[in-house]
Image (tube, rainbow over the protein chains, first blue to last red):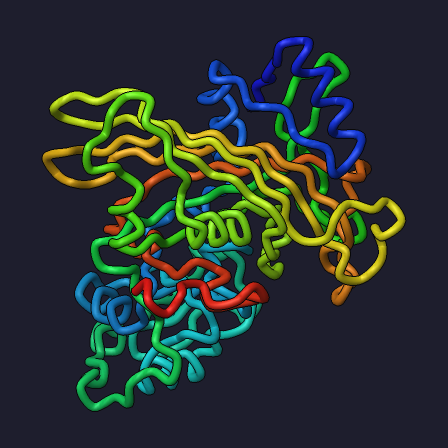
Length: 87
Length: 310
């Protein structure tokens, strides 16, 4: 689901010009677009279901809870940083 | 039991031994019992069908094997690389980053581009996430003691640098270096004050990394970006705590981000648009307490915290 954000025409034209040339100031973000733009940038519903899992981040805690709840452990590892951070 | 780990920060000696025993390292998914018996195949993915077979294999094991005792942590050697904890009394912001695009009529929307066009698996660009930590002193400095509507102040340079160079950049390719801030502004303006709370507006812009030069797109060390942000901050006077810290930013990125692994992003535009957003998190969930990426990795812009700040 991707909503569209319509900026005022003057702002849009200014932004188009600026977008075409790096190094020029980026236009101000209109207040009325604040909430919608945040929604656009945050993860979209259903986009990354694996991020919605209540991951643990400590091995001993995971092992203790696995025993207490009689469950297997699924371990997701990343080589450069937590897989729950940048991936 | 879901467990996510940074391979370089897997814990004390018992924890590292356990991970090595089950092969939990690198970019990998593995399923195991608490005692270290590997379940499922070695190329496991986070897919329902594959995980269902893990659960079935687990259920077939005798109960004493499923629930065997684990070594006492007191006998373990402390971690060689302890995972830093968030600053006590500080604040944690969760950041997001995605690509944006603009239509001819000026509309801005999320850009659904393939991540690496040259990657044979071709997956869609997925929103990236990272964290920002503020110390207790920094958090306190954000809110004026005698706040009055219209009052305006610059945010501390240390916060500006940390924000813009780590979660203000385009980090859509994950493991990218922080970028030095060439120029930045960030101000907080008091918009409303009552007996319960103080509402503030955040405004700022910044330029990071190398200045734009279209001739440098494929050259090494040519990454750069610029960002405009606006935010809404609210402080609860009774709790003496931030209760809102929402920020949105629209930026442009350029240069060759990943020349060293030949995974240059190819989204058609140069420069390209990206967006960032962030929000306050409580730090109660384990995933909200993982360290900011550039605190531990690829921080080319100096210490995450100045020594006197923690």
